[in-house]
Structure formats: C-alpha cells, structure tokens
Image 1 (tube, one colour):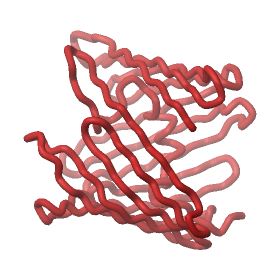
Image 2 (cartoon, rainbow, N blue to C red; image 1 turned 30 degrees about the vertical axis):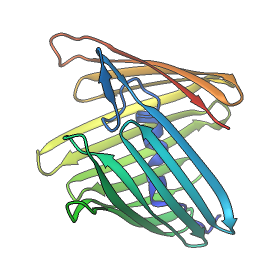
Image 3 (cartoon, rainbow, N blue to C red; image 1 turned 180 degrees about the vertical axis):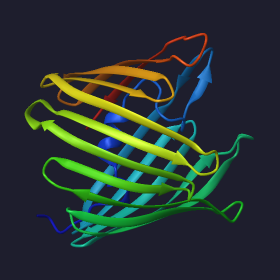
Length: 243
C-alpha cells in the first residue's frame, strides 16, 4: 500500500474519466462557438520532481483560461497552489487563486479545495470530498461549491482490457435536482478504447478513441438528448498529443 494519497483532483477522477473524458460534449467549461461548432485548444506542460515531491504545471485552454500551479506530494498528504485566469461573460479575464489539500493514504483520503476570485474578492468555489480505494473498487463522495453532492464509484472488471464500469449519483440542493449516470469502457485492442454512458436526464453518449501512435490519440464521439423534442445528435472530434 502506498502512503501517498495523491492530490485533491484525484478524488473521483477514475469515475469522471469514464463518464465524461473525451466525449463529444463534456461538462460545459471551456468552449467557443463558431458557426455552430464548439472548439477549444488545451495545452498543458508538467515538470516533475523539481525537488523530491514537487512538480510544476502550466495549463492553457485557448481562448478561455490558463493556470500556473505547484504540486507537492509526500507520504500522507498532497497540496496544490497556484493562480489562473478565467473568462468572464463580458469577455474580460479574472485572476483566480487556487488551493487544495488532501490527507490520508492510497487506501483512504480526505481533502478540500477552493478558488478565490481576486477581482471580486469572493470565493469562486469551495469543494470537499473523500475517497476509498481497493484493488477493484474506487468510491468517492464530494460536495462541490457547497451545493452539489456527488457519490461515484469505479469498478475494474478486467484490467487487461481496461474494462471498467462507473456510476455517479448527483443531487443539487439549490435546484432540488437529482440525476444518475452510468457508463462503461472497454479496450477492443491495445490502442482502441470504446466508451458509452447514459443518464436519467435522457442523454446517451458513446465515443471511440484510437491511438495512431504511442503519443497521438484521436477520439470521435456523439451524444443525443432523448428529452429534447428535436433529438439532434451532437458529434465531436478531439485529438491529443502527449510528449
């Protein structure tokens, strides 16, 4: 068993990756609309082990946001701190101070994270969560912005084929809305991964990711909302290069 709990971002990450990562329409964060197409360009660079346990991360999501972050991990704790920029609805950038911390081990961890808007001098978000991990099951419970409670789990069916099932139960106290999503992934071949998900709001999505080379990945996905009378599918394409 490892005594390092990782970072706060790692809480629930496995389930989030199955349910949201690389789909044609991820949760709305950084997208620009041009003639009916939503697009963004994501660049990140991480320098590891500047000193033992200390890493630096620089990330840009063009044209909407950017951040510089320091990450420090040791036995029983992990912390991050940094500053970023986000786009306001009026088109200007607002500086955001970010901090998160987690304590525990690879088996059980508890942490919190917050963002402070230096422009408005108000908290942009305040999250807290905990995670429990064993060889097959990863479960987590988080409270986002002190409003949305999420319980998620990730179950490994077959590690050799990356076959896994993930589920998320979410409740918003401000809107009294409760939803449930379940998804699965499976590697058809070593460089070909298929994912699909469905939720109680009538949304069904699927994607396939193909590794063209060791560091180049192409993803094609689609989503349809059966609660929408138009039922127009969204189709998306993404490419990732890892160097």
